[in-house]
Length: 132
Image (cartoon, rainbow, N blue to C red; front, side):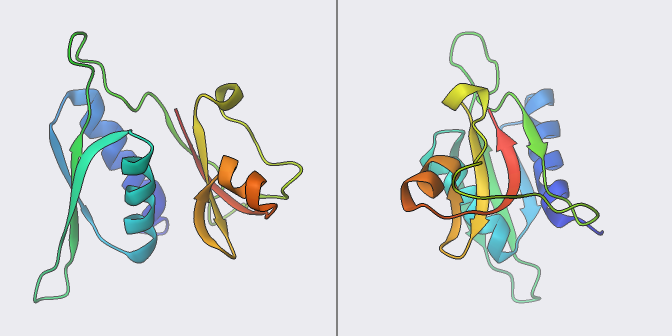
C-alpha cells in the first residue's frame, strides 16, 4: 500500500455509504490523530485504539448517522495531498471547506490540526484531506 491515509479515508467512506456501525482500520500515529480530530468535530461517534501483542494495532471507529434520516455524518472525504503530488498551504492561503462548514486537516509543525486552528495559530502546512 503506497498511501495509508487514502486507505483510511476510503475505509470510512465505504463503511458509512453501506451503513456499517463500526469499521476497523490498521493503526498508525497519523491515523490516530485524524481519528481524534474527527471525534472532536463530531464526525464519528466514538473510537477505540486496540493494541495487539503481535504489533498489528487497529483503530475501531463507531460511525455516526442522523437519527431520523439515517444519513452518515460524514458526507465527503477527499484526499488532497498524496504521495505523488504534495499540497501545501500557508496561513494566508489556507483553504475553507464549504465556506467553513467542513474542515481541512493540516499537518503542521504543531501537529495535525484543522484549517481554522491553523489560521488562528498563523501556521501553514501540508493539506491532508477535506471532510464535510
